[in-house]
Length: 316
Image 1 (cartoon, rainbow, N blue to C red):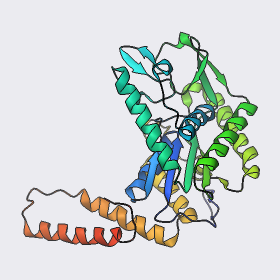
Image 2 (image 1 turned 180 degrees about the horizontal axis):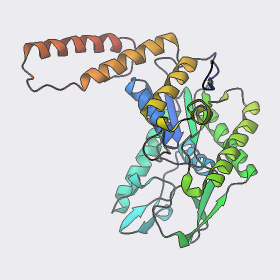
Image 3 (image 1 turned 30 degrees about the vertical axis):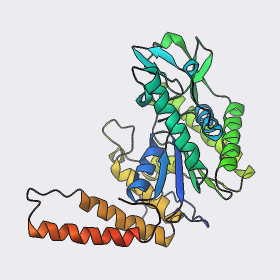
């Protein structure tokens, strides 16, 4: 007897290799995957604009990165004694104009350089809803807790979604390596504040738009992350206490399915060993001069040296 419906990620003919560069952008799930890839010591770069959720804002960020177009004072606003960008996460906020601009533009410069050598791109969309900042008549990525009266919320139309996705793909194909592979996912995190009906409408519009785009590009693929959590892991024991975000067990389950479909055997072995090393590096002792602990460190250094010899980029 079967007691659950498994959702499989189709096996990819093209595999992620140990020297590949992987760029990720979008919702917090993109960060979850990027953190695991980074822990496995692959070359990653995640969310140079911070966590962003809708396709329009993600496309705007990709265009800025593609053009290496820096932000200026006129692109920012002041609120609550901070200088902020409505295109960025609140982690870019600061009390001083030059600090906010430096944070933003340094990430654009680094992101542009990284994208030029990128082999894989992971895009995670979270919502079809967008907010327009009324004083500037500007769609935004983040409201920064500015009073709601300054914003108008609406759903992106199907044409707006597909146009944003299409332009994102074109810009990424132009700047990245010739055979770059772009993986699309829809975040399994439900936006319950929008309402459950509205959340389902929002997610369904994202899924529909992505599947309208896929046939037009050979290098674009859909990862059924949303479906895995909604159908395969259909139980609240796979969620955090907020009953919205997937817990560590769920993330690792999706990670394993992703790895089985997209990692080469060499990459799989490389990551697994590095994750074990990372866990060992977290080991603490009350007596660092203990001969047994020193022996443990020497063996760990030897394991790291073996792993380092497999790649050109610096690990650990």
